Image (cartoon, rainbow, N blue to C red; front, side, top):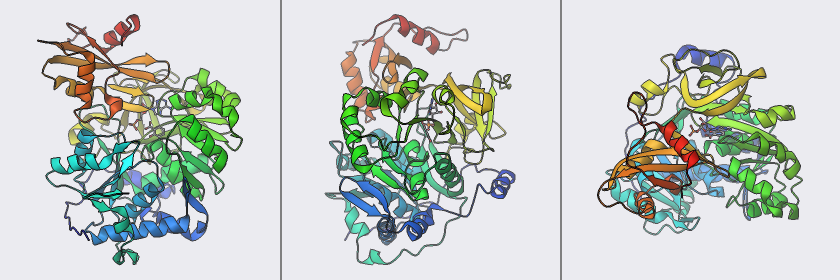
Amino acid sequence: MNRKVIERASLVPSPRIPSDFADRYVAAGYWTEETFQHFLGRRAETFSDSIAVVDGDTRLSYREVSDRADRFAAGLAERGLRPGDRVVVQLPNIAEYVVVIFGIFRLGAVPVFALPAHRRTEMNQFVDAADACAYVIADIGGGFDYRTLAREVVAASDRPPLVIVIGDPEEFVAFDDVAFDDVASEAVDVPDVAADSVAFLQLSGGTTGAPKLIPRTHADYLYSVRGSADICECDKNTRILVVLPAAHNFPMSSPGILGVLHAGGTVVMAPDPTPSTAFEIIERERITMVSLVPPLVLAWMNAPSRHAHDLSSLQVLQAGGAKFSSEAARRVRTELGCTLQQVFGMAEGLVNYTRLDDPEDVIVTTQGRPISPDDEIRVVDDNGDEVSPGSTGHLLTRGPYTIRGYYNAPEHNATAFTPDGFYRTGDIVRVVEGGYIIVEGRAKDQINRGGEKVAAEEVENHLLAHESVVDAAVVSQPDQYMGERTCAFVITHGTRPSKIALKKFVRERGLASYKVPDSIVFVDEFPVTGVGKISKNALRRALEKTLVD
Ligand code: AMP
Ligand code: DBH
């Protein structure tokens, strides 16, 4: 058996919510002593034989998931993992996902949530930034062999993580060996972690070249989970279909997997997001709720097969991650026969929902209002001054489940947060009657590709690595289906590569494919602003007039 003892520095402290705020959040009952370490065990006491997770023919009760998670935790401890150690998790939507994350939580270790789309460069960055001890993958997912990726990650790392594979492990450690060891059958015996300690590291869409990790605590995140479950009216009859990648903050906690498990409902994993797969599962599993990004809502509403399936169990369809147009929003009830809930959230914290009993007009025209009465919302102009009520400006927020800083990123934190601790979301919004927020645009240098966030600077850096590229500027271009797509303006010297070759070059640098520019425009110079900076506004305007491929 492959045993390995790995020692790692304990979690680097990140800016915490100051104690005067923390005291208030405890007094208000938002922050409790509950942690993810005991979350599933407690649920298993209450909901024991109810089905917690469904994945194809696999149906696991709360008791079974909890037992398996305990065994996995004990197996990790056997291999030298300790409370506070980081474990990168990159899994498709499978039942084991829930076992794995709760096993890590049970040990008091800290999951780092990667997406299945991430590739070599991103995974190296996460493993490195988090100083991860272990990396959990499935053998194959979506036709891609993650063991090949793990091999590259191990080869590139000074401190290679222990790779644990669900399925055929090849040279790595088998998940089954960790979770079903003889030694691992004893209940794990570790000290309790504190509720205000970091529970996991979530990924930000980011605006810079380097990824930013988001430290969320047990207390802050569980408050948002309970609040979300409440607002979304989850109970033991809720059956949620997980279509988006499970590790994304939206399907994880808005109310997502965690909100539904909190309430004793059932989490059903979808192997792919296509309407035909989803409709079939909705009918078979009597799904009541689903969370989607806008392009998927459009695809579902336009799919003829929706008439071939009984979708009558579906009560709530959530749309979030990117702006959902009011025209499309208006069609949801008639096309799919369920209530639309708009969700405007961020892994950094703040989540807004339209309420299920809101008037139809509020549901289709706004992106909802915050979970908590103590979510502080400020809308400011370019100088940081508060705008008049109802006017458009930059959204800043602070509250009981919004971070005060990214993990181990003091320089970035100095600009991403105000001195008094408000997170600069980079979103341009308007707050209307009742505190509802309408997202009007974005100030941050990011492209929102149907909910997948692309940091312009990151892609520009990869383009600049090409020997013929002198300068690059990546901007968004409106897209009927995706909302936005990426367009890279590129200045070259010497022999100009073909557009296809340049895209291939970016892809082969080991990036998630959603970051590869959708189109490329070669130019001789960039338009500049009065102060001589590249004018991305002018580039976006130029795109409105040109046809690009
Ligand atoms: P992240 O910080 O990577 O978790 O991404 C959060 C960002 O996604 C927000 O700051 C918004 O820019 C965007 N976003 C999420 N939900 C919505 C929505 N319903 N409408 C518009 N933008 C959204
Ligand atoms: O886009 C997001 O990050 C997001 C969208 C909806 C999110 O984090 C959330 C809900 O919690």
